[in-house]
Each structure stands twice: as structure tokens, then as C-alpha cells.
Length: 84
Image 1: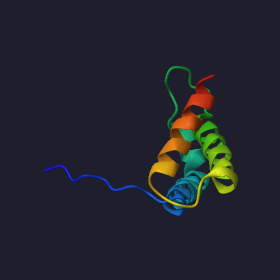
Image 2: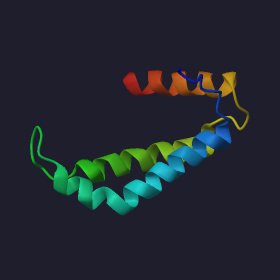
Image 3: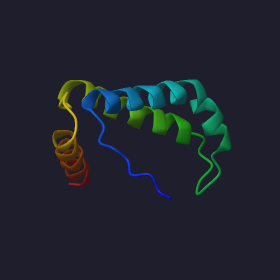
């Protein structure tokens, strides 16, 4: 049975990004070492960390603090901004 996910609050989403960024800060070097495809340039972990830090900062200053629909609208809007 698939459990339906609930809506996250802005604070919960911020905490998820903060946790992921903290994990990447500790492990970016190990991920860099694993990088072999398509080009073994050794910076995949570093690139992931820099991207996560950028989005974590964006979340701190622009994400609505309430949950539900406002957070969903914010996420969709950010995705559309990043595409263009």
C-alpha cells in the first residue's frame, strides 16, 4: 500500500534542504571520488553541494512560512524560473 504524502510546511522544507546540505558538506569529497561518468572530472559532489547551498539560501529568504498550497505554488514557480 502506498502511503499518501502530506503537505510540508515551509519550515519542514527548509529543514530538509539544511539536512541535505549538511550531509553533502561532509560527503562531497567522497562523491567527487566516485565520479566516473560521463567524464571523470572529480567535481560531482562539489557541484551538488554548491547547488544545494544556493537553493538552501533561496529557501531561507523567499519560501512562505506556512504550509500547503503556498509552498507548492512557490516550488512550481522556482522550477519555472530555473528552466528559463
